[in-house]
Length: 332
Ligand code: ADE
Image: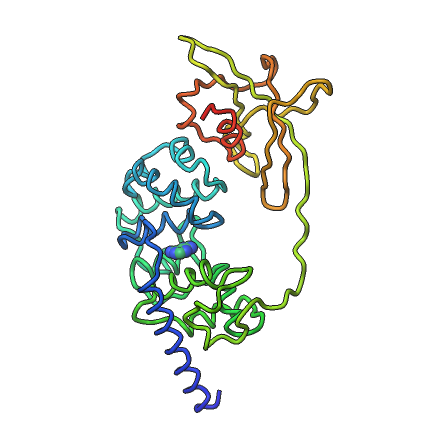
């Protein structure tokens, strides 16, 4: 690039950093994982925040840390207890990878948390984004991140769609070398609270003067409509020993492609057309909207499953939908 233009870009980038960081210093949300730069906590928060909203993560993060306060405790735990603590966050593969990575850290790194983007990348469940997020936030390494929020901010500032590689290059060029962790979090924060997907709050944006789009970019393609499905479950319950109420749950196969090994209610393939469902609820998983009907079950005769006393339910790795149904039935 022409050196004069290059200089101009650098001045603009510097202005962008200064304004963004000043805004972040004044307005950053007090999220629990920001309280200290402990790499274990930063790692845990970043894994939980993949595909899960901040509000839902806050609910589970503290409880998970209470159960597994250090990477050693996590490594020593059983998979069932890790999955149970993860229950409600969804995408359980993340929990299995977290557990596997904790074991590697303890066994192969002698409990010392890998402290560079490169080393982090080698751990299960840690990709380009997560390695850069942990390296920058916990260790101050100048590694830029691109997640959905950052992508939107960059596209709007640039006023056009950018390819994946252009996104990483632009984020890297903009990154503040002195405060990379704060800069990365500030970009995500801006995308989450101001530069939102719909109706961005441009009038309160700290970098509006440096932004080309100043609003939503024109849509290019329409997202595919959600598929609709109906599904029926049996809520089987009884009073067990000592009159403690029990509910009948089945375990998903160990090799299921989703939520392997998690517990759920018995799915019904046929329902009696003359009876009335106990209740219905809506549930969405990725591209499908489910209408879920829950029926009072009779004694399950053939199904392999377990009667679980209600007081034990909080320790069982339930699918998100099973949790929702049991909550609605006031059993959880
Ligand atoms: N999303 C993922 N990581 C985040 C962080 N550290 N702050 C805000 N949003 C995030």
